[in-house]
Image (cartoon, rainbow, N blue to C red; front, side):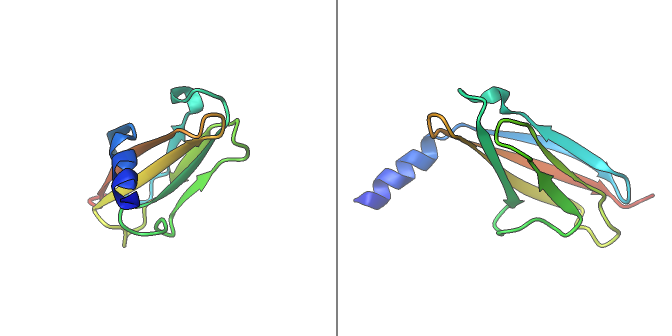
Length: 110
């Protein structure tokens, strides 16, 4: 029965999708803002969809939960053409969770 409650909780989490076009060996940066949350204390995590980590060329930095997080890096020649990422924001005041999926389309023609 506990599994049913967990599934319902996950289904009810707000979710959004965004897409970005990147170019091989060109710096990319995306700011993750706390403005979508109730409080100003939000911790972000990000991973490749279905995997625990990010590719080696991509990083997430957030100095403090009251500050925005930055996803950044430069795609390498061996990067996949499409990369799906899962971003989770944890609101530290009311424990709400918001998920966002970002798709990176990497152009290797340069």
